[in-house]
Amino acid sequence: MTAGASGIDYALLVIAADDGVMPQTHEHLAILQLLGVERGAIAVTKIDRVEPQRVHDVHREIAALLFGGALQDAPVFDTNATRADDPGVAALNTHLRAVAAQWPMRPDDGLFRLAIDRVFTLAGQGTIVTGTVVAGCVLVGETLLLAPKPKGQAVRVRSIHAQNRAAPSGRAGERCALNLAGIEKDAIDRGDWIVDPRLARASRRVDASLTLLVDAGVPLHHWAPLHVHLATQHQVAHLALLDGDTLAPGQTGRVQMVFDRPMCALPGDRFIVRNAQANRTIGGGHVLDPFGPARKRRAAQRLGWLDAMQTMLDTGALDALLAQAPNGLARSLLEQLTGKAAAALPLPADTRVVALSGDDALLVAGSAWSTLTARLLETLAQFHARTPDEQGPDSSRLRRMVAPLAEDALWRALIDEGLLCGAIVRSGPWLHLPSHAVTLDEAERLLAGVLLPAVKNGRFDPPWVRDLAKARGVPEDHVRQLMRKLARQGEVFQVVRDLFYHREAIRELASIAALEASKHDGTLAAAPFRDVTALGRKRAIQVLEFFDRVGYTRFHRELHVLRTDSRWLDLL
Image (cartoon, rainbow, N blue to C red; front, top):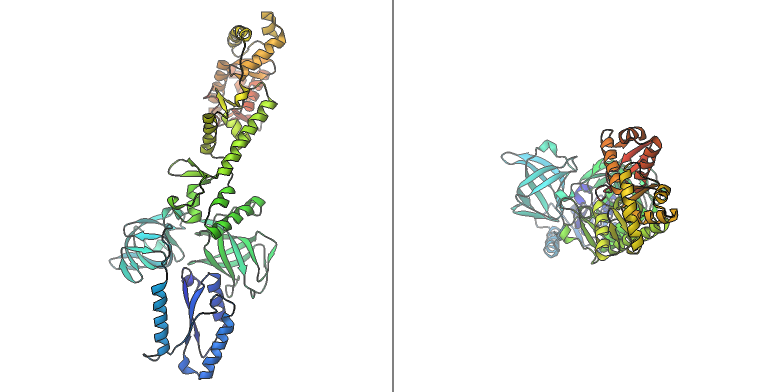
């Protein structure tokens, strides 16, 4: 019954006059309410088998059953199916036809989804699947995917029967039979889906809002097993409670349903749960996020995301969802969460779009973009205050300080915009604020013209500041101050205090480090670097620590690991 009722808009609740309202009637009505079916009619059957008073009593039972519910005002029809001219059957037929004629068609602007409830073969036709089209529209000749199979097998639609008639298309709300090419019957199971390729992703963890019926019996505790029916899917799941330690009958709470096999779902999909013995319906609800995390599922940030998902379901707007994504959301993920094509996504006007690889893009809320930009400028200001002698960090190092979890494309877009508007400046590989620029007066330029060749000629063993000052008869403080200015301009690099290497020597040492690391799975120890550069052990360690400091390498368990995300050497 749950599989058949999923996806319908109007229900016919059938009650036999001789039996009256039975326990199964209560259960069926509860399922309809949990699935969100709010319109329907009541058919009282077998009135020829009972006395008129019994029919009257059944009407009273029905009124009590429906009181206060969505079907409270549903029309009731007394029927006798043994008579061909029964007026009750005729009235019911007329009513249903009138409802069908006036019922608004479901919008079919979503991505296609059909829940499979039957699969068979026909001679000369091949594989046939039947089910209700939950969303979207399909045309003859289209290629779709079977889900939630691990890899998603492609299938082509040979022909379509919609509402028992051959048709060129099938759309949301219709019962359809699809003749599929490219797949055998044995590869398809009841509960599978035929979907648009953009909706083929499945998950074993589904976050949802769950309501227990008042007569559910006992409260639910963490990791309680339940039977979950979603569309035509049926699996046992363990519940991880997200809002408390128990969920009592009559209460609503957020849960994560953990399945043994992947499930296909979209936010807003309704489901029914039955007890562990599968002999009683105890509640139901709707999906919030079909891709729940394995860890930190009760963290404040995660619960805020679920709040935003509920807001999206209630309003149809994406503002709250994008606001919960400080580093943006992939457009493909939003298609999965909304069930809509990219062109139909209701994006806020200030949304930034950053192109990703393939045909995807990153969507960033305007407020999130402003926050990242402000954090970028604030981090640079703090860096300059902390290390005034350095020109600034390179792009990779700055990213690790500002937004370590941001996509490469997003970070590049932030940097490019900052450079374009002049908020930041690039000097070689370094990024800095415009106010942190270094200028030399005439005397400093003349002295630099003498000191730089001396440092360059020193190659891997350049002279110390004191030696440069002594050789030129210049105060040591003057030389130190000038060398720091040259370091901020990217002409030299301070490896340790008062020891500056020329840019070309650093580039050469960095290339040697990269070559040696490539021979050892991207790692470098001090000893082999010392041997290949002919540096002493102390100096080799100092140079490697300098590479760690500027973000070219990172230190991990006595080894220096070459960073694959650093462009520091390319920009020297």
